[in-house]
Image 1 (tube, rainbow, N blue to C red):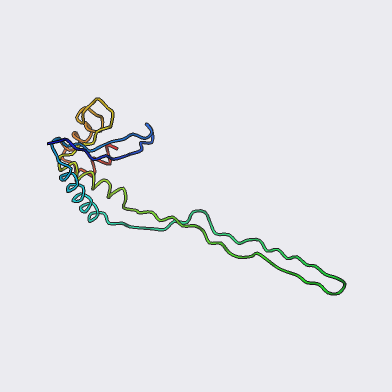
Image 2: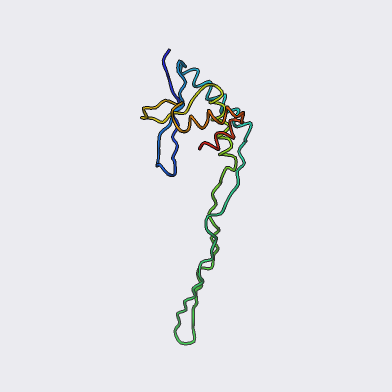
Length: 150
């Protein structure tokens, strides 16, 4: 059986963007797809989307301009502007990080390990792998370990 992996891009704030993948020796693409679907469903049921709209900036009222033109006693004035422009809103999923942690926990329980692409070390020798294994040995829930080891 071929070793297939699931690629996951994660941007690390200190080290820049690094590419990680989930590795499990001896799995087929069909098994990877199945595990992905199962873990996505499990994570979605544990942490369903909780969408909330947040304003970006604030609304504003355009200035009012009045211009007048006249000849003699006849004056014609035109007023423009004054309309209100509401703020732009951005929708944020408040459960996204919890859902991501549940997804990773599910893959971890199924035997997948996160490995940095291009590294010469295997999972067990990586700092993340050591942290995850140590945390699991303490009997911690995987989601707790995932948050601690990020």
